Image 1: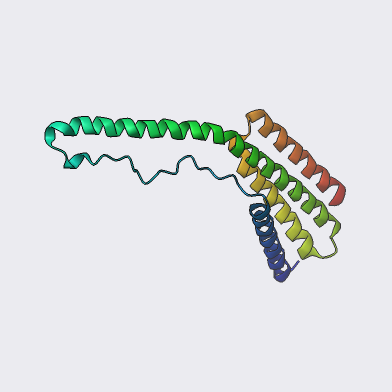
Image 2: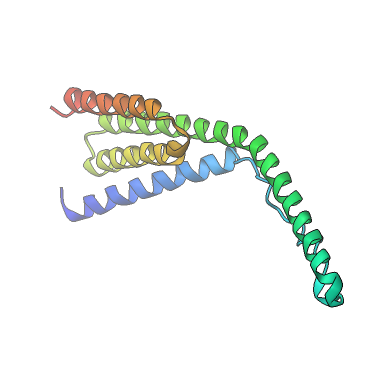
Length: 163
């Protein structure tokens, strides 16, 4: 395989990964986290304008308002977290399926080396993107199982198709 074919394969892989990522962002929108949108700190009491004897009480009141806002934001995020986790899990599943299918399609297109290599690299990167997006939300057993399945699948594909 000459340098032109390798460059075309790399271009195919890059565009494929970008295409899939943009497709997911276009057709499966990430849920919006509205929990930490501050109201431009409207509850600031402007304690500096008060006389010295009133400033301390003002600062306590301001801190109380900020603490209440923080508690409200934390409760909001606790409600949002399961929605975010579900989205990340679904994206992981979608990317893994697309990545595996891309690798399988690449295996059947061995006649054109650049297309074959581009699809193989792109499929692997798509799977990797799915794992990276969901990694923090996976428990350790799920990580182990998923990586084991992917390893077995890649070895099997290599054994069956690349001999």
